[in-house]
Image (cartoon, rainbow, N blue to C red; front, side):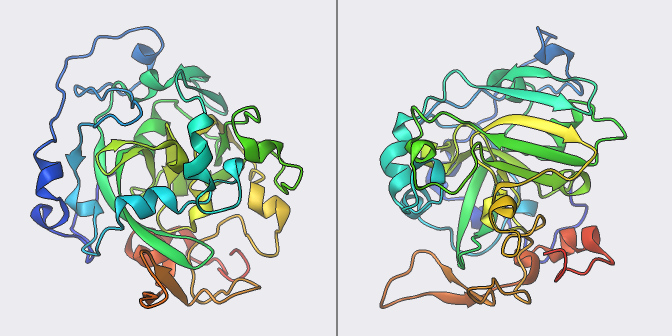
Length: 325
């Protein structure tokens, strides 16, 4: 579902796209015939998107209705200041060690309450769809934030192709478990019960803002940012946007999620950005927008739902968001 009116935070196309990136954009038009498993998935589209290859530029369509006028975080900060505990707990550990991860070939297992379960290659998942560029704010629960130009597809479009049934109330996601190539998973100091798990309520997953990213800054996702595919849910804290997805399950009951399993008093299932609900060990009223330094800390006020309340507040009507944090 597209936004029918431009939200208050939308920009004109020319304001959000650097000229050097815009010139490289093109759409790959091709008539698709039904082929193998992918061909059996509905709906079908007339625009083909190639599977992402590390470092490769991706064709995409800019989406000004899903953008922001805030300054984008520099590429280096986006790719060198990360939480991806599969490679270590330091912010630069993912960029230092994620190169060891194998992302080609890649497949995703789809299971549970849906009519089209199976194991699909990443080519099957993206072939019938056209990539979009969406520029979203990312707010970490640790009180720092970024603005990132993601490349991907609406999560709702992907979900519809698996035809979830009426019992599908939640969507569960799971990250790759590969301790041979993901050193954080073999660390004796890890507190996470691998693999990393996350989940959304179905209406959250089908919201127009929910996005499956395959790239950023016009190129395929770097491994440290969750290659080859990661979730982006911009109104929630960043740990909800699970990386390097290998399993999607539709289920009737609320799934267990990794940080909620570790510390439920600190990390609720919903984890919506909310300056009115502090983390037990720090305030959530402000955030440090990267890049920042000792001389320029760049602190700004945090907005409820990360500023996307117009699109998502209705999902939580009548809920006590201090109880269901």
